[in-house]
Length: 293
Image 1: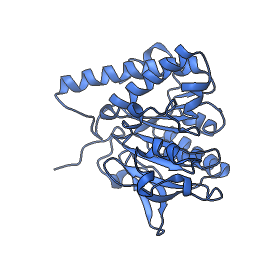
Image 2 (image 1 turned 135 degrees about the vertical axis):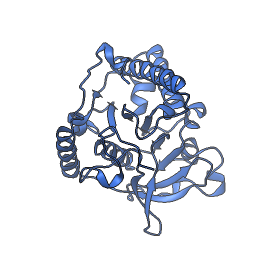
Image 3 (image 1 turned 90 degrees about the vertical axis):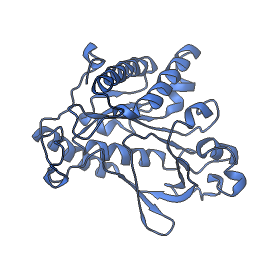
């Protein structure tokens, strides 16, 4: 039986443009404690990253964004409280939001409507999730400095509105190809409540200052069993504990992308998207973002 056609009209993995990926491919994360490569699936999953400042969270987040940028069947929505951690990817993103909680809320509202439209489509097709051959693209929603939007900037109502919308996207987005990767340098219960954390299938705890902070990312009780990111050497940036849904934590070291690496990957992704007609829509919160397939 012939392989299903992709949104680019390709018939198999071998027919992909040279240098491109697919969001249905696992993401290269780094290496384990034995030096073996670690690849994690991102399609139909969400990923939470936590740790103290300098633990390497943004480097890990950039690995996911780089994979999505090189995947011609995926589009990017970037929320960055510091503006500069994800700012190098702006040219290949459909939407980029800097330190503006109000704008971030408007983006999440549009994404919420997009989810509703896609679920209506799946209901009509009598299916439960999207396939690689579907006409619409997947989306990676990357959030850096989660605490900025959920607990620091704006008033309490704004913070609660952002958190409620993000929780809905994390909970319902996976089946319709909207994945969330979020990073925070303040792993505390007010930033990552249990109801939100448990929706992330994959979690990574970089160096944390306390056992309780490590447990907030990995899950309650792991520190008592000897799995605590409090033991990570502060000079070992990018190292931490990785846990998958239903699994046990494992030591991992995330790959590092320098600014020069990111610019090269961004430029390559930009060329690929231009050549194959999948350049960013640059919707800038136009009304039709909510009606996008």
